[in-house]
Image 1 (tube, rainbow, N blue to C red):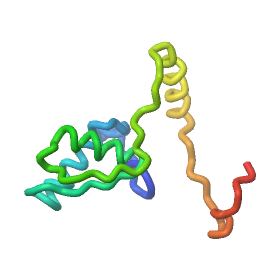
Image 2 (image 1 turned 90 degrees about the horizontal axis):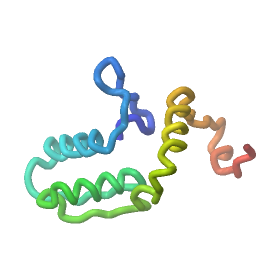
Image 3 (image 1 turned 90 degrees about the vertical axis):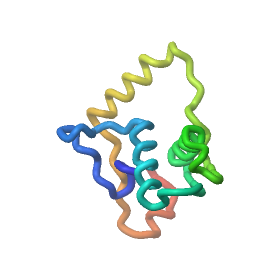
Length: 115
């Protein structure tokens, strides 16, 4: 999915810069149109990808034969009163986005986190 792993972030000056569920649904729809233009497909997704696969299956059930959902639990329950704090956290993260941690060796990856 765009913006994850080693993929580039969408450029704001080209209309990107956001990561909305509808954008991921459109990406999946375009990929399926390209690689499997007819018939049903099997979708396998993990975490947010599992949520995207389930939403897509609900929107285009005629295109999906089966879905494998690995840890796609949907959105965490919340109450409207939590919205201001959640939006504040989101705005703060836009200013200082989380960075991927770099590891020198594979052993460092497997070692318990000392932070």
